[in-house]
Image (cartoon, rainbow, N blue to C red):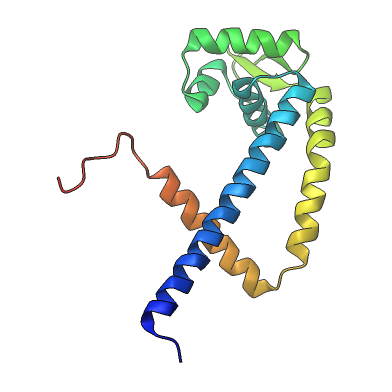
Length: 165
């Protein structure tokens, strides 16, 4: 029979192991994203912008420069420089809006979509293999855990208030 203290110690070890696994995954994913950015010759913000543009383009609702600036939380001047870089590298293009001839939309190029798909395709295949090996119950638990973890991290506000006050 185990005492409450042994159970608590085991629980802490279990939590430490889970926290460590999340950290290892986060570090591995960060390293993979870095390699992906390097292979595409893009900086962090440029890659984030390209991801946003690809998602918007696939939905048929391209982003304006102002919308991209809001999504990235950067100034419109910085967005102009960013879009110039993405155009120069062949990853994005400016087009007149089909609905508002005065407006300009930012679209990813077909070649950038193909480049991202080829870069991320292997990762997505590996993720599918791992996910397919899980039972529906395991998938539900992991889905809930990751969703809750995402909410908890998103809700953090810096700097943290002082303890006790």
